[in-house]
Picture (cartoon, rainbow, N blue to C red):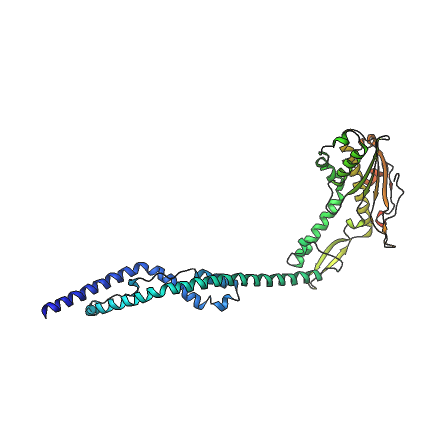
Length: 384
């Protein structure tokens, strides 16, 4: 009995020491276990499947916590600090721990497969929820944009840059800034164009143009005129004919209509009524701006032609400025000539463009100008 008792006691101490060692070892993995357990709690309480279906941010957080894998089970995970007074119970505790460990080890791969599957499912759900939210946001933005557009005058179509702004006040500010910019561009059209004319005249003349071939000269001048540095609201078009015998160039240039000048002087946001009110531009101011703009285009076109004629094929230029539009009285297409002028290269070279008034300059060049270009009152072209 004494020897049996000693063997039993030795086995109990050995089991106890094994438990104690395992318990101390388990402290090293406690951080991983705590992270995983915290993730499981968050998935069960805050970031549930039901909430994830309704909110992409919740869904994203669910993915984040699902990415935390369950640590592989270790024998030490199933051992508790063994009190010394329970040394006789140590063998049973060790056996129980080993049993629970083997069971957990068998179940761990299955749980991991379920986690990975749930992770992939949630990622797919995330894409779906994001798409639904984006669609809802787009619909809400569209409704907001349509409402904002409805607060502007009915005949005004906002540019995309302005239409997509949030808030009527911001839209009004940008619309007014664009109107001011457009008017400034029309006011300084000649000077700005002359400063940038070098970019157009730098293009090399074709061989036929250098040789003075009428078709080659006409085609090259057309390309120069259609490339004039003008505000984007003006789309330059020109037809050119050149006579080598008379050394005269005839230009029919398509001028913009009066619509190039904004009808509105500005817009005002009435906050109390949540609406935008137009401040109309006086008719006299609009007519004057338009007359000045087409006069400046005429002089800029003449300057471009003579600047480009480096081979000196042209002695004189006839310019006919026409408008391709609809007659407001009949609704029929009409193409009235609003400005016609013939100028020699020598006479044009004497003009100092730094401080001229475009309309006065055309008068000095004996141009015939419509008495009311805004109303499409025509003049007879010098040459057609």
